[in-house]
Image (cartoon, rainbow, N blue to C red; front, top):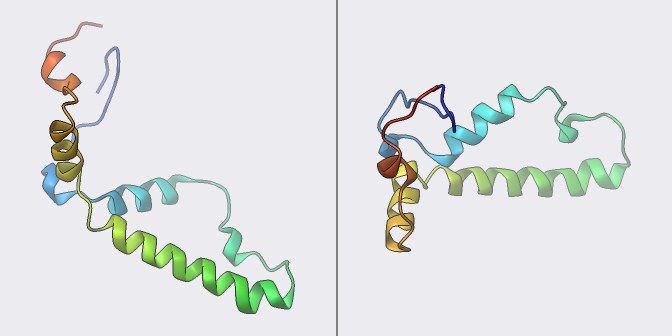
Amino acid sequence: MRGVRGGYRLARERRRISLGDITRIVRAMETSPDPLQDAAGSELGHQILRPIWADLMDETMARLDTITLEDLCNRSNAAGIASEAVERVDFSI
């Protein structure tokens, strides 16, 4: 959205959008190559360290897939953080 703070209009309900979804979209937009796919490196790096990083990334993505935008909003409300969207319903350009 255009405006003072900009933003995005969601194509799905926030309860149906996970942090994993967002992370995958942002990653797809990046132009830098995936360092885990780089051919350079030692045998130790390729056979031991890279698989560990790949496992960690898989575990992280699995966890991010369980957290939705709705969850973040609920956590924010529970913490007493006021929503700017409620306060700034109208804006001008």
